[in-house]
Amino acid sequence: MMNSYLNYIGGRWTEAKNGMKHEHFNPANPSECLGLTEESSAEEVEEAVKHAKQAFFQWKQLSPVERGDILRKAADLLEQQVQEIAEIATKEMGKRLIETKGEVLRGAMILRYYAQEGMRKMGELLPSMNPQNTLYSLRVPLGAVSVITPWNFPVAIPMWKIAPALVYGNTVVWKPAQETGITAIKLAEVFEKAGLPEGVLNLVNGRGVIVGNALVEHQDTVAVTFTGSNQVGREIALKAVARNKKFQLELGGKNPVVVLEDADLDLAAKLTIEGTMKQTGQRCTATSRVYVVQSIYDSFMEKLLDKVKQIKVGDGLDETVDMGPLASNKQFETVSSYIAKGTEEGAELLYGGKRLEGPNYFGGYFIEPTIFGNVTNEMTITREEIFGPVLAVIKVVDYSEGLAKANDTIYGLSASLFTTSLDKAFHFIKHSEVGMVQINGETGGAEPQAPFGGMKESSSGTREQGQAAVEFFTSYKTVAITSSM
Ligand code: NAP
Ligand code: MG
Image 1 (tube, rainbow, N blue to C red):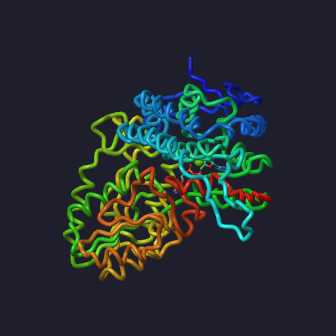
Image 2 (cartoon, protein in one colour; image 1 turned 180 degrees about the vertical axis):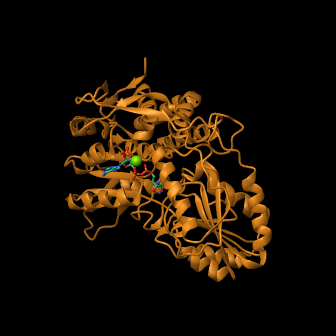
Image 3 (cartoon, helix red, strand yellow; image 1 turned 90 degrees about the vertical axis):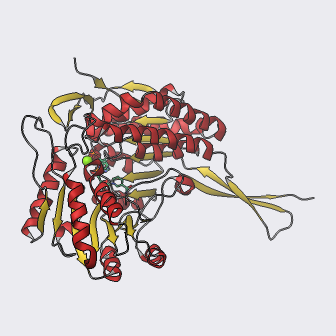
């Protein structure tokens, strides 16, 4: 009997009224069916928003200590279930178990961080022009918030949206990516067991164009926080603006690394490869371009190719594997078409590029780690987000050309410079057009206490995580009390 996972609406586990189900398959072995989730319609969204709106009145009246206690309990439960949830996430979207375990633990860390964050000051006492006035600002919750998340971080991204939403007193209707709908169920179960009152968090599984869209268009959701592709993000922004709804978008990236002549080349090669290949390149902060100054080009390339050759590809549950499959057939087709385009446009395929097939690969969506040389900034593979394990290498004359070419993109999520020059490091920090800069580090990586997000078309300009989250999940109320004595 196949496992069937229901929606979580108003504190009850319920079926979608249309009776439709979505089947989940393992990208490392697509003949393995993992279970069924609900393929909901706008009716379930209606129901979920109704509950979230009702629950808001009680939830916002609890103290942040009480709300934080529930998040802390959820963190403990998440940690206790790390193995189970990580295995489900690996089977649903392919990344290695060590990565999904790390992500579940990160989820717990985020919950604990926000459990405490509710204890910070939520307003300011202000001077008033009227001496009889006590004037102050208060940060207040927004109401029922829509949370729409992607499949590539099925635990951490939902947690860094849901935890601050809840601790500041909002209620949530969450639509996870369909690919990772079972992992999402496990997270909702954790909140239920932690004692979250009914209706405070509602989970509706289903398609983005149906469930996601209904959530964005619903008149009673006051804000939408979204992580995903630029195309969907833009559509959501337009709909939110038309309804005067607050919105937050974290979108794609095309993250560059610049390697200078004075860099530690072993470190630069290691972190460029890790930055590109971790999670099979399916991270918004993944490295996808490397600009290498010509004087060290040959020695850097030797080290880079040496590193990539050591990568073993296979099922993410196998602990000896360095890189899992792509998350879906759709991902596989997209990444393959970019690799074909790279060759067509004249880039030189230096390593990889092929599907891995045969008895050890079970028809999974496995692709070799791929490196292109002889690339220019005009080629499609340097301009568009690939979201796969593909690196474009570009030779530059010096630091100035490297910086200019790194900035020559519509994206602005993260960038990294490898150098031992303090002057160049500070110059890069000042002039790279991104939300997150690394010096001698990998382009990926985020810490719960630090603002996360991009510039240019990588974000709506809002930031997630850390104390930055209070900006999005609360509104100001300005209060004046006039006394007559
Ligand atoms: P996606 O296709 O944009 O989907 C993201 C979410 O939006 C999914 O839950 C999806 O549902 C839903 N959705 C799709 N169409 C919708 C619509 N018309 N209205 C409302 N919701 C809709 O992105 P993805 O393929 O899952 O994720 C990959 C992308 O996310 C990449 O571009 C990556 O760079 C970006 N990303 C960004 C960050 C960041 O923080 N900047 C982090 C991770 C990923 P279904 O797919 O289930 O139908
Ligand atoms: Mg999708």
